[in-house]
Image (cartoon, rainbow, N blue to C red; front, side, top):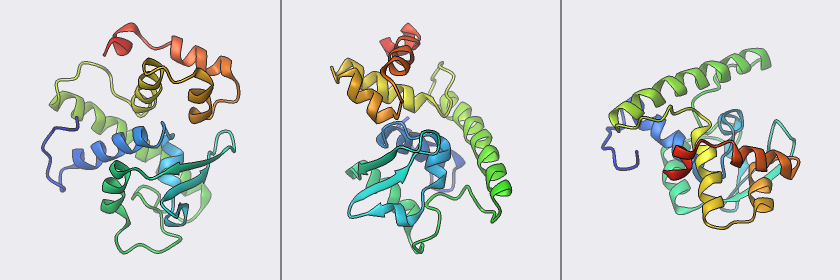
Length: 171
């Protein structure tokens, strides 16, 4: 995916950016990603509250994250969303934007997989699972993985890691 040559105008370019942003942000969820605003960037870090668990996150912006952020932050003000998904003003319409954005993202992920000859069914969760799997196989303690994924208890993380198909783990 990372080696695929794409023009900035190609919808797959943004899809790839989102995919790796999810990964570099410790498996951030789609709703949390598209809800990020410029004000969440503080002193070289991205700070936000996870919607599902209300857990605060404080992620150092790596070089890879900066490269992606550079594409989306130019000319934006403090209260602007970083990513161009939420465009409405009311909470109900914003939620609709998020649902539509996730559907569109998953649709483009299928096209990205085809272009890269990836047989796995790519979804918005694959980068999250990949992040967790790579940590597991680099001997990062399950407690640390659980914390990064924002799981409330260790059992959830253990089920999460054990539920990954063997072909995904092999890859």
